[in-house]
Structure formats: structure tokens, C-alpha cells
Length: 89
Length: 180
Image (cartoon, rainbow over all chains, first blue to last red; front, side, top):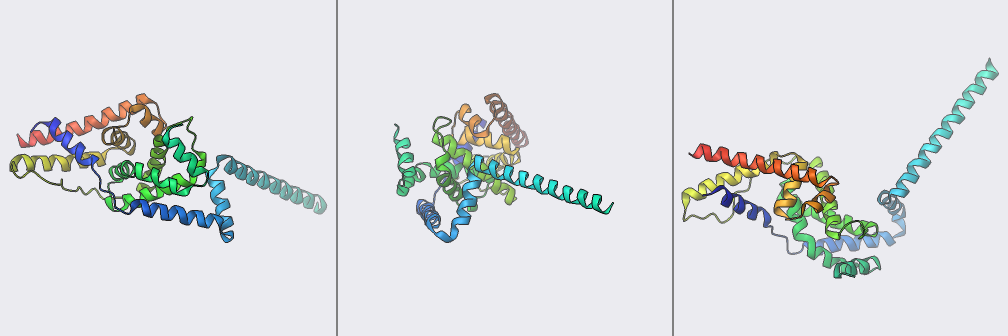
């Protein structure tokens, strides 16, 4: 048996796949469930997190806001420590 | 407007059921790609479900000017496969080939042996080389599309496929040598 023939039959075997008959229904059920949860008010926070994670701009904005808040807090703390030091000193 | 663009537009306008058409169209190539990448037939449909759900959720971010829908979907499938492989280290167990030809028992045995070794060689490739080979050889995607999916240059894809094929060829040569 030639290598080329073997390789081709291996390639063909790898190219064959059986898909469950209800695969599409499973996917569509999940899609509908997700659509339902989108509309449900209790899950708004989850939806917000999802929206942020799927939009690069929102993600960047959130990270930038977090970073700015952290820097501001750090400045306030340093200021507080310095002013305490000045008062005590 | 192509038929596919029309379906995507309908989904984005709220016709959720139209998404079924996209799932039916792409389920086979997506599942096949995942199966050949993660080597676990039991979980490949679960991963494929995740792919389609993620595709549905991210559909508003799909830009037809940047890539075709199939390229975009294969990219989602690629990323989900990488995550699945990270989550679960899958043992390298090869499935015996189906419908062996018993009319030629010796040839059949040699072929089985070669299939097992080729499977092992495929699994031993680095993830990048394996993905390139799977997309080119089993999905018959053009190099340009594979490069887009992988986010690398066409030259890199060509080189990965050549190296992967070279590895498979050397495995076949080794077996031939053992037989002779």
C-alpha cells in the first residue's frame, strides 16, 4: 500500500464526523434560554458583566476607571499620611 | 447582500430562529475541527455548543468588512478549543479506524498501524502546527483564511503546515522501515 493512499484514507477518515441529531435543538435551546435571561430583571448585573466583557471599549473604560480610582485613592492616602506626619512632627 | 448576510441581519434584528440556519450550516465543520483539535469526541459537541452560543452573543460585533462569517466562526471555535484543551488534558488514545477492509488482512493491519501512528503524530504536534494542519487538510481552508483565523502571516501558516506534514511523513517512513 502506498503512503499517499494511506495518508489520503486517514485524511478522509478524519474529515468524517457524526453529529447528534438534536445538536441544533440543543444550541437553539441555549440561545433561547440566554435570550430569556437577557430580558429577566434579576439577571441585569450578569448581563452588564457580559456586555462589558464582550465589548473591548467597555472593558478598556472599566479598567481605566479602576486604575484612575486606585491612583486617586493612593494620592489621598499619601496626602493623609503626609499631613499626619506634618501635624505630629 | 448574500444569503448568509441576510440571515445574520435577520438574527440581529431579533429573529432568533434564523440563527438555526447558521448552526445547521456550520455544525459539521465546527464539530469536526474541534474533534480533530482536542481529540475527545465526547466533549467536542459540548465545546461546539459553547462556540455557537458565544457566536450568537457576539454576533453584533461581527464585521463582514473584516472577515467572512466562516472565518469569524472558526476563530471563535479555535479560541474555545484552546480553552477546552487548557481545562482538560486529554490522553492520547487513538480510535481504531472504522470499516477495516478484511479482504486484505495484511494491508488492513498495516493501515491500522499507520492510522494509529498518524493520530499519535498529529497529537504530538504543537497546538499551532496541529491547528494549521487540521484547518488545511481536514477543513480544506485556504492558507489566507487560516492565517486570518490564527492571526499570523500566510508564510507562517505555510511553514507550520510544511513542518507538520514533514513530521507525519517521517512517521510513515519509520513504520515502512519497521515493516520492511
